[in-house]
Image (cartoon, rainbow, N blue to C red):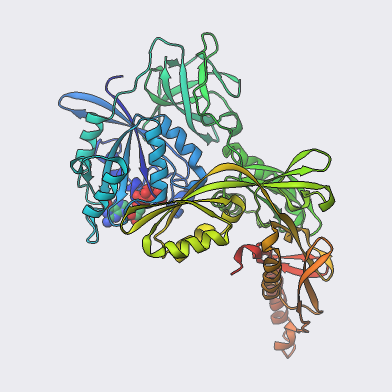
Length: 595
Ligand code: GTP
């Protein structure tokens, strides 16, 4: 135990976490050069393409120093706000953290909030300036920021480059010297923290854990404290490049357990594993049920594909417990599902996986957050679908979820950032200067205003220089209404959205304008109206067109004609017939693209 070092990496997206991790694996010969593909830690194709570590993993390295052998466990953490709970559990499994800062960029919001998490858990922080090979590195400036933030000495900061390998040996030496060995009592009852899980089609759900006390062996009968389920330990082992089974793992070890678990839902990140006979007396603190934050309807484009979509959802949920779904029907779109996601990135990932892994073409409706509605009957209901909002006379009060947002920006952009946050009904609660050129702003804002396009807007007004992180702080009363859209007098439920009353008129008008652009002209006039209850608040008209697609092929070449018609049919595939109007898929997300 005294020669184990468990550590994670805290870094903002693109600051070079994966590249540096690769160098560590190389130097410790955990991965031979032949096996070394760039970024071994990112296994999903999608992750590689997006360049984001979506699921966290762990990997064990051997390292020898002055004749002493050490085991280093690197616990990888995802770098996106949608997955911050997983980050907190990974941090809880470590004794140390490498704080990696891109020396050309400086400290970003994500880095700070994860750093606070690490400090809360008393992790030893090793500050590293990365990308020192780049000509625009500004080590002194960024060192000042780091010193300000964690109060270390300048000489504590390691200058490194994942690209050239500079500083990497020193990082390893520092891990051994300053990260404490895990504590814990090997004789105590088993207490292991689950910090991640993956789904394997052959072995079922594999949980990754760190043992805080006691030990776990193959053949043991264990219990997951929060889910209260019991399992036989079919296999335990450590994670090298692949899984390596062991007879037993002891206190301080990081490893995996396989026990025939079929559903991702049964393994909850943050849960405690203990023995059935001789259990530990309490669960490890900090467990939370992961709750979806963003909800949207997902419908097959071809209604015949509904059953296939259901099967795809089931499969996706097997390996992604944070995805929720339930059947929903829409007058406009037919049968589909209301799905819950951790955030917008998660939603995009699911949409892409449906497309790639299941070849499912789906329409996603306008996403919304979930609201609490207090009714005149004294009930409180959770509303996560525009159609679930009770009629106005039944509503006493509506509450909406609020977040606290941390934004770090160059001072030049403070004005624009404030304007944006105020447009999104944000209230500034704090303003700190990290350096003369960099400020940290704290806002309380409605989650509903930021889940959609806030991050993109923030990036564009700050020319990419602002960073953003948030956490939930609770619910606050809101003046919320349902904005409906009518096409030729018929309400299209899939186009309804829940929005703040103060924005309703403006949004209604812009929705109508946008839909006029997006819906192609058809052979009759189309009236587009926005309404709150029975009141029409905006209107646009699409004028009829009579187009004869075959007119171009005068003459009688029937095959050419057929080809053209065929082509037109294909082009229509991403359209949905709503009443007598054909609506293209992108119209259903029009509300997100208003500018
Ligand atoms: P996420 O997984 O998205 O959080 O990103 P990451 O922090 O793991 O960053 P990654 O290692 O993928 O590196 C981001 C980009 O920076 C890539 O294009 C790397 O090639 C580049 N990069 C990483 N380290 C260095 C470095 O030391 N020097 C230079 N010049 N480029 C680097």
